[in-house]
Image 1 (cartoon, one colour):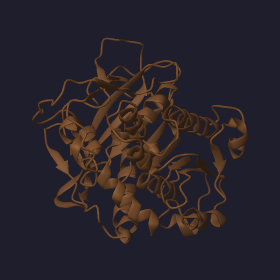
Image 2: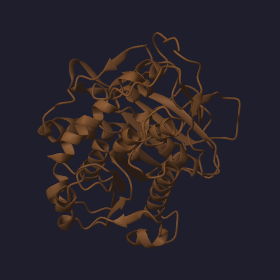
Image 3: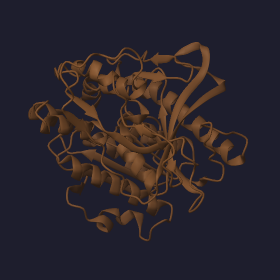
Image 4: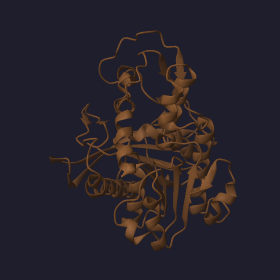
Length: 401
């Protein structure tokens, strides 16, 4: 299958990025070969609300870890949320220094000199107090691509939080390249990147869906006041679990569709350039599903999306974004073009991974469609969700045939 073969190739290509985002600046710091000359920046959020972020350690006492039978299932979840207007909490780095500079040369053999660039700050404050006005806020679950950490879609998550959403992004332990826990452990992936296609649907997908439902259970406990998280962060009263959505990239998009099928609490979902796998393909969905994919005909097989539609009674919105490739739909689509613009990466290399779309235009469209889709799904905006294309009428977005 073209999709799965390409997925594995791209997973190898972003291994270094995943390590940096999962482990931050932990470990030995490589000495820069040259003074930093380029700052890779994260686009500003577009909403009016300040954003907080916290990392949550969850342990499921009732579930053995499918990858480590001697342990119960452990997860790290990164949560972005609307925060109070305060500058007393430290800004959360987008990507902590050190790890990426030490590993970037492994990124598909690109050979970028260590120390040739640095990362600018993110736009969230660590453990900032939850906003006490305008809430409670709808909750969005997020599942990343195969091998990726939760933080690899920071640009999307921060922006949603700035518009009044809580975004809970799941690190799928032992599948993500590395997940760091509060005691200092870094649990690395045990899933081979050359795993056979059936492993995605028969093994990885059920584990991810179980992770997702457990995180939603824990958010439910928070709203009841029976669980607190994140030290100084108290989310009680800040989360509205009558309005739960989910989105995901790549295998995370497949996770979104199947989690919706298995759990009716998830009212709306977005699959960002992922396949459709599992029982949802044959049985369909009774709730809205937005599919937003790239327009490389070699990447996305038409037959992969289409079987779900005849059996789905919910709103179906299949769209494609012009000029994109698979990795256009997370932060890689912002990082590589900036390296190219500053002479650190050949144009052909970047375009083969993230396409030729203008990165500012691409992230603006993705943010706009995500926000508007969920606003319409939850009654936060007027309009018919089935008319999302005409409601926005953005150039560069077109219906999937």
